Length: 228
Ligand code: FES
Image (cartoon, rainbow, N blue to C red; front, top):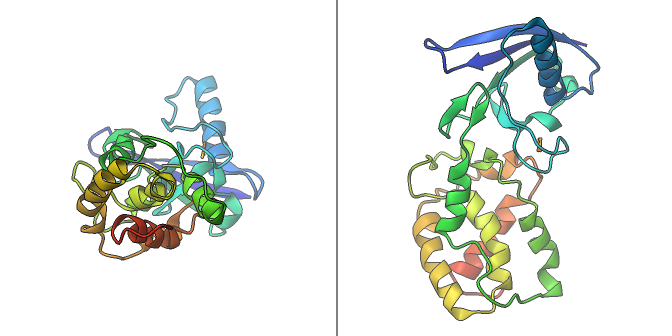
């Protein structure tokens, strides 16, 4: 299968697209074609494409980028999904740009800190919510949910769905009232009051997390004070 690939090179003004052709198997991933390009570029002495990866198996979120305008993971996006033979790679647009396809996603981790997403005391393990806590812990912190959120802009206070998804397992497992009190205040201010319920985050999650369900559970626990 042959595809034409366009990679946005943004750091050189004016921005331009690097274009090349890649011929591979339909189940080759976008990550594989980037690695192939870089190996060839290295042997030619050309500049490589800057991009990030870690696990290459849909587990770390490092390879998040816009693929044909949609935030996705390069290691779990495959050529057969682009039958028209054209792939456009661009960096995520809601985060500070670093180089080529790399952005600074530290806003994701700042969002977690802002709503106190950490265990501050004994952990209450409840078999009833084990599955939901597991789903919450499956978040890759890739930033795709924030990329599509109409209310999120890095550098501002609104945390986006990443805080609700991850906040759930902390709220569900927290035994200390003091932590929950602090977390409720921060959650209301930095997440709940800013969410416009577009739920664009629900459909985009590359980890397949039921984002809407975890938002509902977090709201129940952290806004209405229910044990969920
Ligand atoms: S490299 Fe880890 S999710 Fe893609």
